[in-house]
Image 1 (tube, helix red, strand yellow):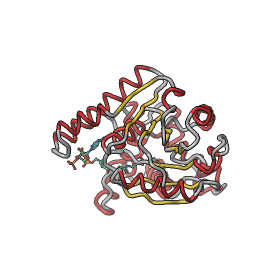
Image 2 (tube, protein in one colour):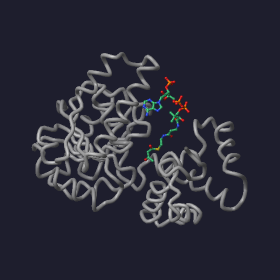
Image 3 (cartoon, protein in one colour):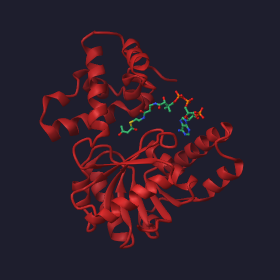
Length: 285
Ligand code: CAA
């Protein structure tokens, strides 16, 4: 198993800052790479806020918080950001061309031994790996929001991912206090292949007037013990992200059961994307 000490996280959005947070809290040296200073500042603010939340719940001490923050370095320069990395985790928006460009740059500049991982929620790991010269050291490392809280890391093997890479990343997830589950590359992997049809079906219930959003969520919370109803969860994930993932499932399987609900398409077109825009199926301050 490779010895991983330095981890670079590309992208400081909700997932990226959460990933940087858990690696740094587990003793890894982290370099967070962002495209603009304002995004970097926002990411570091979010990490500090989430550490404060853990501090107030006495899950960590003030010293833990300080040490975690000291282990997080940041840069706007991808080349500089991956030069010393043993592992690079990419967590940028779900657009293949954007990820391709980043992975090509990372592949050219990271040391030979470095493992490249994508936090993609549905883009093919095999296809991303093929953009690099190290498909054997390329893997999916899929975290869940909120990253400091959710126990799962879905580890996705591309066609050429080596057994050593898989074992290293599974071991690493355990070092973060997470539970890794391994799956082979397939549209939506396991998590979103199961989750998104449920969310889509809940949206169809709204679209067809079967019940109000609050009531649909109440059914799943009280009847099935889900911590959030599917519509609240869709808002939390982002309706644009849900639509992108459903389209990957629909295109990948060519099966009408994954057809995105027209109401979801309309809400995304209207810019009602959930928590991040202040409105989705519910309203947020
Ligand atoms: N950082 C650190 N801690 C956090 C946190 C964060 N960002 N967000 C919440 N927490 C902690 C809280 O401090 C709290 O800690 P205690 O248990 O010690 O009190 C705990 O998490 C629960 O939080 P809250 O009390 O604020 O609220 P809650 O009980 O309603 O739980 C929730 C919030 C954890 C988000 C819960 O509603 C939940 O589990 N929801 C489902 C989340 C989910 O399904 N995520 C996966 C989405 S899919 C995805 O991410 C991937 C994809 O590919 C689409």
